[in-house]
Length: 119
Image 1 (cartoon, rainbow, N blue to C red):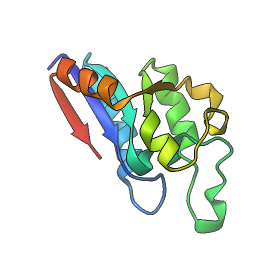
Image 2: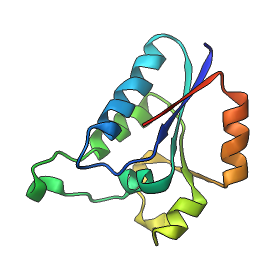
Image 3: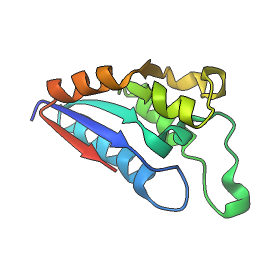
Image 4: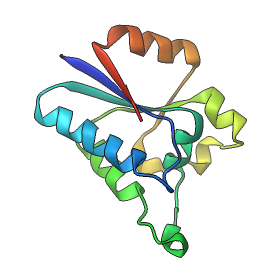
């Protein structure tokens, strides 16, 4: 496999999907696999700035996402998912350099990839 898309569909807290997805994406890079991360459905909540989940006993996923960005994994968010949840561009963590894409663009990304992993 040369190109994999990791799809984040779940919110950042209450399960391990988000952190495991980040680990998968970083692991693929170690294997020299071109990797992209797409956040859809409730997964877009991972990208919100100034998260403070201390009150629920979790660590913020933003630090791990920023590391993923530093490793040059492109981060995409589905425009429809953001709009459905009332999330605006200014609500997203600017350090992540999130690219907003339509469902058609998401489909195009999937067609170009060798595999997709949905979490």
